Length: 314
Image (cartoon, rainbow, N blue to C red; front, side, top):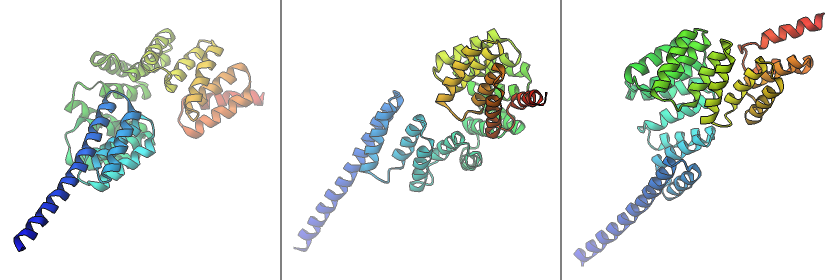
């Protein structure tokens, strides 16, 4: 009897373990289906499969991390941060969600939090180009250009074939008004990848500052061909039309840009410039001041406000 009871116990234990493994296998299958949908760009479907994987196994760190990637693609950055945080709680040694959360923090403009996560990743993966690239992007957004260039130099040293490194270097030199260097890095980036919209956008900004407006329009048109309805690209193209005195064409693009991204300070600035050129100084002043609220160092806003002040004085 004793041996028979023991046998029954082991049979029951084996059946119970088999059930647990089956549930884990189901969750893994849903994860793989989600990954396939994600790779094909069907983010809604991917999200459904990751939801199902999590409902089967609520401690599945990979599913939370991958659902975070999907939410990031859907521009639901706060929700993505939440998923990455859950993945980290479930598996503190899982390094991917730290990097992914750092990327989402950049979109939320939580730059110090992004750097905190990147420090964790760098301790484990010190020689990873993407870590130094993202650090460079964070510091660029903080307007710490020297530090950004140092990180981008390190990223380039580790991976000389990543066009994103050169595009970001070009953006920094553009902001520093060192156009020769900016153009050199744009050309390097386009040599590696001629299909990145942001590269053409930076190129267009350089041409705009150099008052090469026809070339700028070609660059912004290429950027919009690759990424239609991008608010920054629409706004930048609209500004070129303002500079060419094609005010209504410029306004249409700037208004479309602001519909897509109402708090874009450059869009607010350009809208203010439009009304300045149309002679509506009161409306121009409001928009230009609003642009400075969001971005205190934005180009041209103070210059146009000075013009309004002089006009009001006279």
